[in-house]
Structure formats: C-alpha cells, structure tokens
Image 1 (cartoon, rainbow, N blue to C red):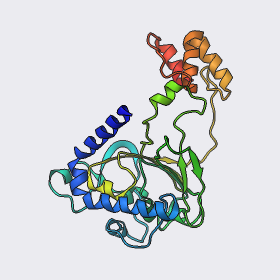
Image 2: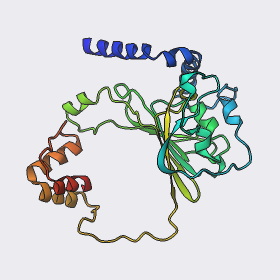
Image 3: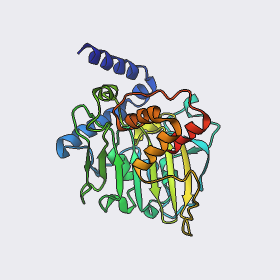
Image 4: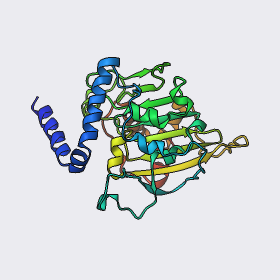
Length: 295
C-alpha cells in the first residue's frame, strides 16, 4: 500500500539523518545485524551467548573482581552515559557525572532478579554484563521485555531454559477485543521504554534510560536516571482515608462515575478497555481530575 511505502521511506530517511549512528558506529551496527541473522538462523530467536570476544567486553572486564564500593542513588539527578574511549571531540565532553552499565549494576553476584526492557536487545551484550550472576545460569531470574513486529507475530512469553536462561516477553499492544480504531492507531506502535528493575538483597534499584540494551549505544550520548529503594524492615501500616484505593474494579468504576458523572465516567472506562480511541475530559475541576488519577 502507498501509505506503508511512504512510512518505510520516512523511516529510512530518518536513519540516513543520523550520521553519528551510521558513520561512527557503522562496523558495530553491521556486526550486530550479522549476529542477529546468525542467531535467528540457528535458534529461531536472538537469545544466544556466543563465546567469542567482542570489543565492548574490554570495558566490562575493567571492572574489579573485588566488591566495589556501592554508590547510593536517590533519584535527584540525571547522569550522562560513559562513552567508549574511541569517541572524542564535542560529543565526548560533558559537565555532568557519567555512568556506565557496569557502574549501575554494581556487583552482579548480588543481583537476585532483574526486569529489563528495551527497543531491541543484544542478548550477547546483556548476558556478558550479568556474566558473574545467577541470572545467566538459572532460568527465568531475568525477564526481558523486547520489541517485535506485532503485525506478523503474536504476543507471547518464552520461558527460559538452561541453554537460554532469560525469560523473553513480547507484550500485547492492544486487547484482543480492541476496536478497529484502536488497532489502526497502534499498528506502527513499538516497545520503546528503556527500563530496568534490579533486585538486590536489601534494596531495589530502578533505572530509566534513553539507552537500549546494546554495546552500540555506548557510541552516542544517552542518559540514566537511577534511584534506590531500601527494603522495608517493618510491616507496612495502611492508613484508612476517605480516598483509600479499592481493589475491586466495579467499585472503583462506580466511585469514578459518582465523582465525575456517568457520561464522562463511562467514556473513560471504555477508553481504558480499548473500546474508544480517545476521550475528552476537558472542563473537569480539580477534585474530579484527582478522582481520575486515583481511579
């Protein structure tokens, strides 16, 4: 179709407008594409852990085998990523403190579980980052939410095995009962978040990044937001308030309709279920907007 051809041309033009990615990283991109082709041909999906060395492993190997000092992140600032040593000039200059994935992972043997999301994943890169942890040995301790072509493939969850330990999730982009309007709106949607959850023994580390899970993204400027949440040592005490959340969906829907009116309430509920492509909530007062947020 003409619209599809125009969209593909637009994407190609966008790629051509990224000289840093195409020139500085040309060999890295080609290596990655060849690796993925070999992985697809051999395993029918890209998760594989080859043994041959790759240049980005040198940076990972610089990390000490002793337990390094732990940095504590309070979520109050952003960090630029540490670029590969080959990058020089204005791109490599930053007045901010920089972080690498190795800095964020701290000491991988202490990581008990992890959730990683990305717009495409280099599984060799990911496995090497976590190589000293249980996550590359025991199945399903690492969950990876990856992008895929949902116009050709169905959403699915591939459980890990001893040979391929990561659980790989291809998430649904819309409910199976979604309307044609919703399907049309989401036909070019992608799995684009770059989000990490790292579970340590006494704290949880949350990472929001602009960098995908691949060594090639160390060739360009990216950012990390990192925050540590300590494990609670005492039971959580829930305080009952008039605005306490309810677990029952029907009760929550009824509360919403009572606050903002049946018409707007029904429209929001249909939107949440995928039965409407958009909904207009303009004109709500402050209390009504708060009710929508709680709902």
